[in-house]
Image (cartoon, rainbow, N blue to C red; front, top):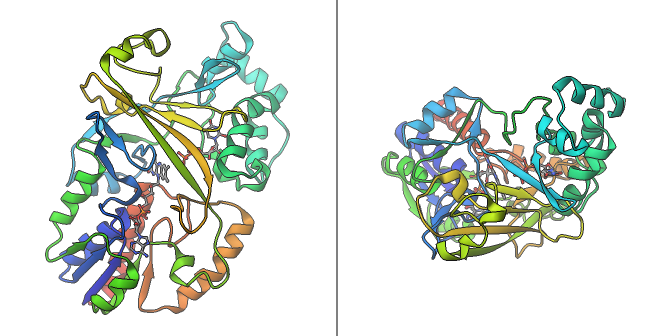
Length: 381
Ligand code: FAD
Ligand code: UDP
């Protein structure tokens, strides 16, 4: 069978890998000039390894996904740590016992913090939105300090208008574990995501990749028996029910030489770095960006220079990248209309973050692509 696959991100390339190894012929197209989709990384002019579309921290609880990807990469283990900058200082974040000590200005125990939480958390047994999920865990003061302003900036919606899963994905701990994430496996592919996906493609016999190629051009140019679409589902259907809501982003990159970084040492606390952690979040409303990422903390790259990336949330329109589907009830209802159309398209399979309109991480879309390919292999056996 001949497959045309639209999108050379994790979803498209993993699907092509499984299908081509089962004897099918795959043509992948992507309108961007590179593969790896939003996970694309490259060395910038200063020589620093950068994630071009925002920080991508690989993490998963699935040993099956680790085993699959480990065929194509070695790993650089990382305990991703971040800070939040508000009220003029860097706070330990996600909220943990160290954050609590900063809040009360003196040493404390886990029992002290648990007492504080039981006195301050709101009694909401079944949180229905992102405000309730945080208030029910930590109460108003910590919610307002770290979540309300950040979320308003990021989504241009109040946390009350977002699913509990949005803020609920940030862990809250009463011990001193200050890791950003909780998954059992946390590591970066040793040579980056682009190299990882190039390796998967190289192990996909007969698969061809055409960059700078839009679906509209490809659908005629590459005759196929079945289509796998990993782009935006509303775009596929000509936005006939109106565009789905998305949030976009604007990135500002700034590089510093080793010499310039010497002046930053009192702030970064570490020679060769601009800020004290891989990521610093800025929850205050009057700061226009949400976070500054200095990936060198995580990659461990041995280089004198560094690059920081400021991330500015942006309203989406069709001229911009739809980085984030919006996890909210109204957006889910709008998506369902397109999903109904998709179900009727028996010759097209929709997978990935944009085609299924899900705020999914790389491990989740990898799992989704493997499952979809296995179904297609059975169907066309
Ligand atoms: P994409 O990577 O979006 O790839 C889809 C591809 O399809 C794109 O390259 C696009 O150019 C192409 N395409 C779309 N439409 C067309 C068309 N009509 N014609 C031709 N080509 C088309 N995940 C994590 O696991 N950890 C993280 O820390 C993390 N951080 C993130 C931070 C940001 C800022 C963002 C935006 C995402 C983050 N993610 C993270 C999610 C991660 O990017 C996705 O899970 C993953 O990249 C999705 O892969 P995909 O193949 O489904 O989609
Ligand atoms: N969030 C917040 N304050 C923070 C970090 C996150 O309010 O300091 C909220 C915000 O709504 C964000 C969500 O939690 O969109 C998920 O955060 P994460 O860092 O996982 O976002 P991503 O990396 O996917 O952009």
